[in-house]
Length: 454
Figure 1 (tube, rainbow, N blue to C red):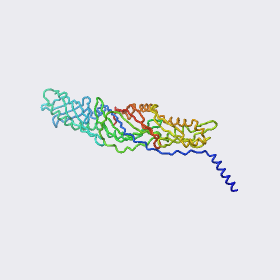
Figure 2: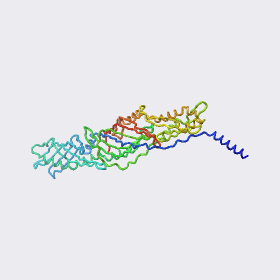
Figure 3: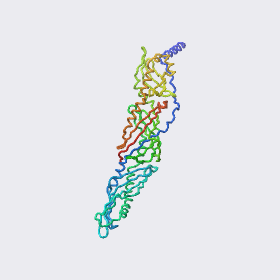
Figure 4: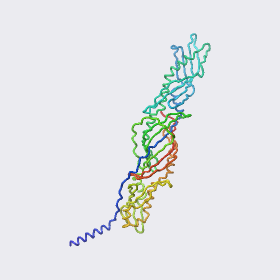
């Protein structure tokens, strides 16, 4: 009786083990520290401010009547100074120079009567400025010189009129009110701290590059500076220099970086106006799995009377290889593991999966229980599915980025234009939770300001 029970138990184990599909061992998941931090990227953004904007704002602030003294009792003279025509401006490294044309009307007590005279004078102002550590503008405006363009002519013609007292009376007033008005307006128009602080915060925000690929660019700025302001024709020019560690992520929008305190102001020098960006673009396993599942789940593979249907796809890394785990049901139930290496194909200008193969344990298992799967099209389908997602055609990407850089409106009256000269891939490797691609971008940007908001 005991022998019969043992025989039945042994027989049952054989039957159940025969019904169970043999499973391959799951390839170990691990990641080699192949990643090196990308070099610091430099974005040089030339700024072109239309000089007319500064002039228009100063003209509006100063107004038409510059000075008016209607009191004869103090010095026996009445003066009215009226701005004539437009103010001209020149800018160099540390100062702004203006020429203000002025019409003068004078009424003078000459003891026996009153006489009136009219003349014209050109006032030269100089605003010396410096940029403080906190990016605020510090200015000091003074009159540097003046020229009579038309000496006062007595209208009622029987007395001579001394020019010096007229000039002194007017200039004493202009040194105060007029210079102070110019100082205030220059600070309002060229509010560097406000603009740079806003830009510093906006640089932390991820930028959507493509809806189709759900790709996001994060600049991760490290420092910011600028070259001295200079005038060239009708433009005021400078270059903003931003050092960044940019990255590109696919899938969900990354969290914005913490802006922190605005870095202290510093003058920078630039050799040219190009930008150079080195960035790591992450293709998350999670996003690749999602798209691979759309392509593969439900796919049926047949060989004669046998067939399997894909139920799920999983991706993870093993050193410098990508492991693709496909879960199937049908004539074979369980997991099938593939291994592949993502590489940049310079001839095709895209990223492909190379050397896609069944892993050793899977191949060994399938040879015993489902060798027909080794002969079918399943391996090719896995490669095609992932290559569709990894088909990172750089010429298309370059064209897309170039289009985005054309006449990009940052704010009303402020536009950016750029030219992307080069887009290249240095290497591809497996990182934790993602396939990482290092990309280099070279080109130039220009920021044009046609209207300044208050």
